[in-house]
Amino acid sequence: MIESYLLKNISGYIDGQWVEADSGKTVEVYNPANGKTLANIPFMAADETKRAIAAGQSLLDSDGVPDLETRREWLEDIRDALIDEKEEIGRILCLEHGKPWKEAQGEVEYAASFFDYFAKIIDEMKPETLPEKAKDCSWTVHKRAIGVAGLITPWNFPIGMIAKKVAPALAAGCPVVIKPATETPLTMIAMFQIMHDRVDLPKGMINLVMGSSKDIGGELMSSPDVPMISFTGSTGVGQLLVEQSKDWVKKLGLELGGNAPFIVLDDADLDSAADNLIANKFRGAGQTCVCANRIYVQKSIYEAFTDKIVEKVKALRVGDGMDEDVDVGPLINKAGFDKVHDHVKDALSKGAKLVAGKHPDELDSNKNLFYTPTVITDVTQDMKCCTDETFGPLLPIISFDTDEEAVKLGNHTEFGLAAYVFGKDEKRAHKLIAKLHFGHCGYNTGTGPAAHAPFGGMLQSGVGREGGVDGLMEYVELQTVPDGS
Ligand code: ADP
Image (cartoon, rainbow, N blue to C red; front, side, top):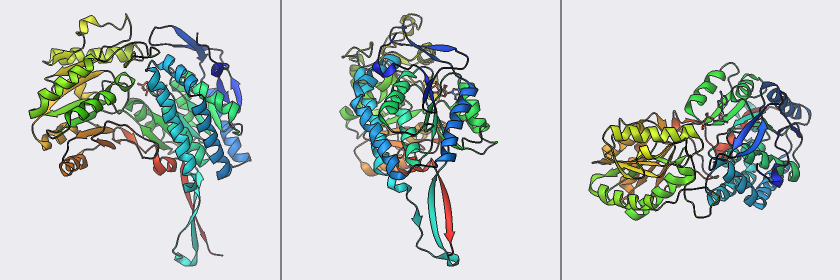
């Protein structure tokens, strides 16, 4: 069992109180590196969610939205508390997710950067009076908190994903009801503990429910008091939320699946492209929605680039994220492992070559969840690793001839979250980038999102943006007030 001074309450949090599930039921959280139980968390459902929504709504009904300076202070206090507690939160995150210790610490800093950013730009919430005096009125546009926001997060960034939702929600003045992923609720509980201890938030402003996804999600979607839902997770659940949102015409922010192409042109700096690819692909053991999924390399440099990649992948150390020199941790669960395994087996059966990693016969999710980083070549578009997001440490390499072909291959997906292009000629690369249907497109970098830049998907990768001023406006309704007096 996990011991931590930030986990003295392994509970939900409603209206300023730590609470258990009404049913008394709990569910186990375990460490994917060794299968050991870390904690048993409450398994809540619709009734607890109803009370959490009511707590947020009654705060809005009684006191209204606290002023802008108060909200700025909350954000700054949360930022400072996260930085102060970085080590302990990072340790909890590493234990429940499995990602390497350093990555986990980096994720806490990343989370803090969202609170910092939204504190700095909170003046964007001030009303604006338009210069025109149409119809003999002075027109002012007020930015109103949309209301209680339902925030649903996945397990791959247990604190990063909630930071990019809760920071703009609090900046806008929206009370929140948060549902973390069942695999990684402990980091969220630790974050609630520090907000409870160190931030002067009114009761009902932040609420945490965990347990039945279907019941909690169902209540958030059917409640008229939750006008906005921000969700990060699978496209399947995202589509369900779209259906469920229709009765109340809810505003949805959806960050869904990806299938990122990584395109290396023949004039690219191959060493830099290779380093960026390794850093991008193996972060979180390949379990991020911005991880390169399909690697397209121009024919004349295909062999040279593949050789560099194979050498680097063979040097990666796999193991428990708590061990300091580990680069790649375990996969989150058996289903995640089996998906990678299935993609490798499918590709090999269709003619791909294994050039780094273990043969699938040597790997078994019943033994442990460590998947050896794998590179395959001679990959074709019909293989599962190209049509579907692998979400694990598999690098499939595909060759192409012309820039037009690279665009066609890269765009050959219904998803549109992240893409990467490497090449020295800027004009050529930007011409190609403009044709790619991906919301985030790294040029000569494999880096992912940052707090100050809007991030989100095109096509089936979702709607809305997180980060930047656009990320704040997701939690805002505009109210236009013509004043004729
Ligand atoms: P993943 O494959 O990354 O686990 P999911 O979409 O299944 O992606 O999960 C992302 C988040 O959505 C988690 O917090 C999960 O519990 C939640 N979730 C799963 N099913 C539903 C649902 N029917 N309604 C609302 N939330 C859900």
